[in-house]
Amino acid sequence: MTTTQAPAIEAATEPPAYRDSAQGWGVVLAGMVGLALGLSPLPFYTIGMFAPELAKAFGWTFTQLMTSVTVQSLVVVASGPVAGIALDRYGSRRVALVSVVLFGLCFMSLALANGTLWIYYAQWVLMSALGAGTLTATWTRVINSWFDRQRGLALGVVSAGTGLTAFMVKPLAAWLIGAFGWRVAIAVVGALPLLVALPLIYWLFREPPRALAAHGASEPVEPGATLSEALRDRRLWIMALSFLLLAFALTATTPNMENILKTHHFTLPQIGGITAFFGLAVIAGRVGGGLLLDRLWAPGCALIVFMLPAVGNAVLAGGSISATTAILAIIGMGLGTGFEFDLLAYLIARYFGRRQYGTIYGVFYIVIAVGGGLGPAIYGYIFDRLGTYALAMWSGVGCILAGSLLLLTMGPYPEGVE
Image (cartoon, rainbow, N blue to C red; front, side, top):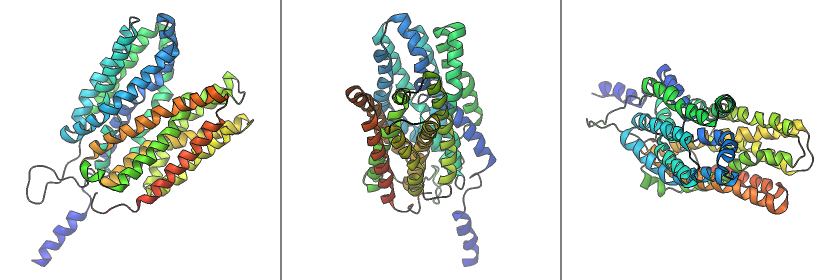
């Protein structure tokens, strides 16, 4: 009996055959496009293109227009965790198919704006609530199940979708506005989730086969912690504080970047050329950071990667700098910004498993929304009061270092969650 049981035990410890398979990379492609044309990047990267047109058409101020981004952040605090629970209950594919359609329609409805500001904000509330199923957790939840040895790389490629939005959709929106006007431009951009993302999700985005419980239950067994168990684990709270600090510092510089460079007396053409490197660095940070996560202990990897934006902040906090130095600083900040969400997805899977991955990730939307929502406003307030970003940039250095060092206290990956 011993000899017949040994092969079965050995087989049970081997990764499932679908792990790291070619089919998984089709899932990655669909996830990358779904994320690129979802709630997280699409409104954020196009609002700057549409804001001047809306201000001209309706007389709205830029403060009123940019408040829509704040509205989105506040709604995601509530809708993000709800979407996470839905992922664990109904599966990522079902949630993605429904949410990408509703998000696209809501985005297209912005083309019908009639100058009533509260209706415009209501459209953003609805878009942020119904589009929450297109946020990062939807795609990374499935990727974590499809990959083991190449998980970091797969997560990096999926997360690179946000960089593609900045690199491709933003110029498309600018061209559409110039050629056809802002209403047509909004309608076309809003149709992209329906025309491009939806078919790929339908044909390629799949949950992997699941191993059934040894006792013959019909429901699949997922390793890892429940939300209640995770909330009693000190490592979750370490991660929460760490990512609050990191989100604050890494997000704060993005909308302030052009003005930061103005304080260094760069011309507008120079600023345009320098900031172009940021989007490319974000993509490189997502893919390169994912490769590192496959090879290094994630908290140690984080300390290495986040030194780059820390140095970038320190450089921009100083006095006069050359264009080359500014480019290197911006690249360092972009690499760190790109790595952040890869790291979060990887840490949740490694330390808490896949059992309630969507729910646990959804809780972190609150952390990211608070840190990311406060950062840009506080940086802007410091500049308004002091006429310089130096104090803000140095506070960013401190937050990045503190957040990175906190992760080192999490200890080794636990056994039995993968």
